[in-house]
Amino acid sequence: MNAVSTLISVRKAGVADISEMKKMAIDSIAHVCKNEYNTEQIETWISLVDNVELWRRRIHNQYFIAAEIGGEIVGLASIRNSNYLDFLYVHKNYQRLGIASKLYAELVKSIDPSCSSKLEADVSKTALSFFLRKGFRVTVENRHSFSGVEIINYRMILNIK
Image (cartoon, rainbow, N blue to C red):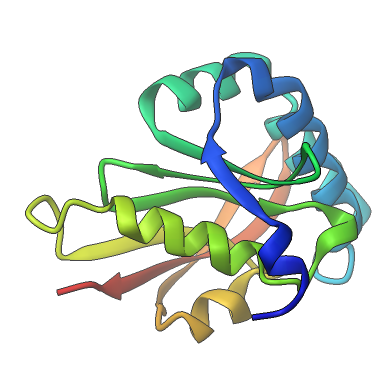
């Protein structure tokens, strides 16, 4: 355990957190993903995430958590139906400090094993190595087109039983 991980607290996220979480996710996409995605892809991805109604629906329909250090949200994650990991973002200034692992571990604890024997996620090129380290395997490469801009990510699965 590193020194930073002891400073991280994880809590359930709510509607009041949308503005801060949305900004953090957009900054993360813009800065952390620039080695795997071009400017047009990043701008398109950001346009999809920059939607308050999307955040409201997800917070109401999923188990949504936020990681904080000193009251600042430095990561967020969500799971839907105990089997689909939807969001997992870490603040651009707090990469590689164990925040994603801590959020992931919290989500895994929330899974009802009677509901699912597997965990699925659609994972960016940037997050691929993280999920491979957690034991996920790629089942398909997704090629999504948004307004003519293709964005590649990967459907991944982890057997949990």
